[in-house]
Image 1: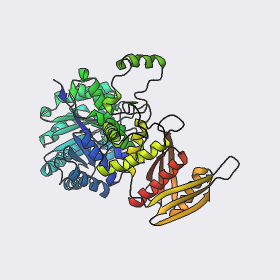
Image 2: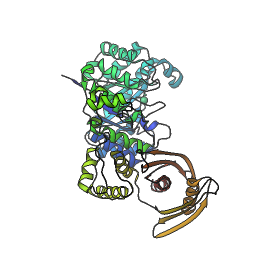
Image 3: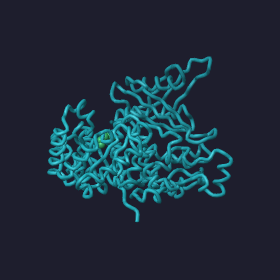
Image 4: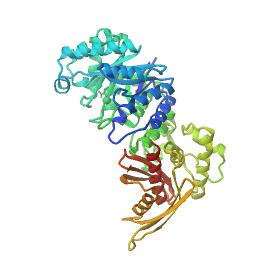
Length: 502
Ligand code: KIV
Ligand code: ZN
C-alpha cells in the first residue's frame, strides 16, 4: 500500500516572492482555480498581514476555491495572525501558517531573541492561531541550520499548543539531500507527539537540491511537500511541484508514496504560471520544458521508435505535454478543435471556445499545419486577455540597413481610429514609439523576449514584453503571430491594455 503525500502549493506566496513577479488579483484567482483543478491539497494564497493586495488575494481565493485547504502565512505576531484569520473567514478549509526562525544565526542577528524567548513566542503564536482556526501549521524557518535539540523542543512546544502540521525547512537550500532527510528522520524519532501531526518539508533550490531533498524526506517519512509550479520563488526558487509529482509517480516503487495530483494537467498549469508571471520555462526544464520529450540523436530516435521506454521514463501524455500528434489545419472543425483543447488540459467556457476557434481559423489561414504547440500558445493567449482599450488595426514599416526605420501604426481606441508614424532605432522601436504617440503614455520598455513556438518558415513567434507605463508597476504583455513584428506590436499593445485595466 502506498502512503499518501499531500501537495502544498505555495506558488502564490513563496513563488510570488520571485524578483520581478507581481500578480494582480485576477491572475492569482486564475492560478488558484487551476491549482484546484490540478488537485493540490493546499493552496498558500498569500501573506495576509503583509499588504492589502495579499489580504485581498487570500480573501478572494478563500471564497472561490473550495476543495483544497486555503492557507495564509503569518509571523508569530498577533496582528499578522488575526489578519490571516480575517482573510480566511470565508474559506471552506482554512489554515493559518505561522512561522518563526529557529537557527542561532536568525535568532541572534535577525530577531534578537534568545531560544527561550523563541519558545514562548512560537507557543503564544500557535495558541492564538489555534483559537481562531482549527487548522494550524507551524514552520521553523532555517530549520536545516538549527540545533536539532532546540528544533525538537520547538516542535514539541507547538504541537502541545495545537499545531496539526509541522514544517521542516531548508530555507537557504544549504543541506544535502542526505543531511536533510536524516534531520527529518531524527525529528520523527525525537519529537514527542509528532505521530499526531503531519510532517511537512519546504526546501529552497540555492544549490539545485530542492526536489532531491524533498523527495529524500518523503522516503524518510515526510507526508507533506511544499512546492511551487515551475519551481519559482525567492532567489533560486523552491522545489518544483511538477518534478515532485512526477518523481513520486515514476518512482513509486522507491518512495512508496503517491499524491492526488492529476498529472495530465501539469503542462497546462506550468504554462499558465509562466504566462502570467512572465518567467519563461527553460527548454531543458524537467517535465514541462520544450525539450523534455524530444529525442535528437539518431540512436535515441531509433530506440524510441521501437519502444518509448528505451529513452523515456514518463510520457508526454502523462503530463499533458504536446506529443506531436496529427496537426490541425484549415479544414479542421470546431469539434476536433474542442477535443484537442480539452486533451491539452484547457477548460474553456462556450464563449471562450468560440473566440479561440475564431483565432485558430485566422492562424490556420496563415499557417499550413497548426501543431499542438501552436494551439497551446493560442489558447494561453486568453490568460492575458483584458478588455481592449486599444486594438491594433494595422501597421506599415519602412526599414532596411540603409534606411531610417519608420513605422505607421493604426489603432482603434473606442470609436476612434488613430494613426501615427514615428522613426526609431529599429523597426520595433519605431512601431513602439508610434504606439506611444497614440496612447500618449510615458513608457519604458523593461524587457523584450521572443521565442519561436515551432520550427519552419511559417512558425508562430511569441513575444513577451514588460513595460512600465506612467511610472506604475511594470505591465506584462504577450503577442503571438506568424509575423514577428506584428507579434511585437500586439505584445506592446497588450501591455498598455493590461496597465490601464489593472
Ligand atoms: O523558506 C522558508 O523558510 C519559508 C517559511 C516561511 C516556510 O518560506
Ligand atoms: Zn520559503
